[in-house]
Length: 585
Image 1 (cartoon, rainbow, N blue to C red):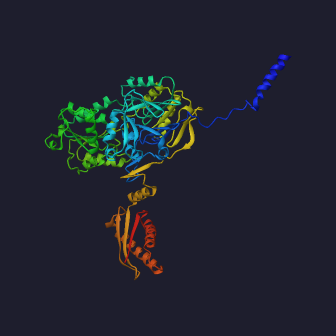
Image 2 (cartoon, helix red, strand yellow):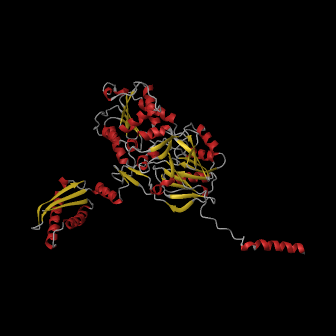
């Protein structure tokens, strides 16, 4: 009896201890000291512009600073770069930037962003630094930074992060993935890679990844640009053999266009030329700067006499000459365009020549690519629209390679990166089909914060600015939507200038209106239309001058813009930009 009573007293005592109710769960704090934020600032749901901010406590580690070529509906825009407003608001937390490749989708924004954040610590391999520092828009800005060379397998401390780089297969030397030790565990960032071995074989670098990953990797951020393609990406050896085949043209000059950052491609062309006893000329400042820098650092090997100067071009037999032309991915495209239009000062395409360049020579503009093909063909050249010469299709892991990396790392969370939404979703579904829970395969979005803390939550409502920043000439971010709309309007429907001189005292038109059309209609075939416009302008101005108490040039311009615009749309169903010039005398 007493024993039973004692038990009851014990339970009663515990339940009433200091008035606490232990049947109710304690509400945990929203985040903990060990919270980790993964913030995509670019590269999600798009091709290029890769950039991530990895944040814990008071430290931010930036991964890559890529750029993206503008779309065809963004006339006059040179580049699109990631939004850095969040970084500007947290500049005191930035501990360093890691560049994982020398391609534009990893370093293209660096010259513009680093000029906003001077004296940052930059971490990259020697080859990537060689490419970055050879870019004119980088060294011309005299950017201040602290340089740290990364070496395969050698860890370095960046703030509270431990970063261990490892070499990956790719189409550019110096490309790496990184293992980042965070408070939540190891995070692998492998943005651009391929196995670069024959099908059925395992690359050596994947063994290093397995060793680094161990059995406790928290998350893997893996590139997904080619996730929908079956099998494996072509190896550099296979591409090198194809390039030698292209260069073996016995009938004329071989012109090959590639991107300056693709040091492997440059080396393969040099190797092909030397094997075929041919000479190489490099056309284009961007590619020549990179070539010279890489050669000085021993990243490209060239025999004496292979590269020739402009003075030796005439002496070299056409079938013994290979010309490397800048122009892939939007860099120095005019070189190839001028050749196609027979406007180049040094080279004339002739029958028997070979022209090889990537499919994505002019991003987002297939009509321009087709015109280049047509022009070269009309000149008698054999055109080889060769995918692996570019920076996309020959470089990125395909389905089996993404799965192979996933199996090697065995992360708790899988986050596909780099690519349109459907490719991110394709890569995530691959993981789910392989046994990953839906909640552990995360498809992110630019600006959407992915948060991990002691509850291992993932997507949050928190967002940071992620709209595109447009680079136009020397201006960064100063283009507005209205400017783009105006450019689209001018490109689509043209411009109509109206010039007239008004005597302010007599209130009458003393000269004009003179009409100048650009890109609107054929002037020679539209005399009647312009006569009607002229008459219409005269009636509008005379009506305003008759009723107004004072002559207001601004009001006249606005009325002309509005009424002439309506008149022209009614006549032609086009909306040219109306630019009235009213001079009062």
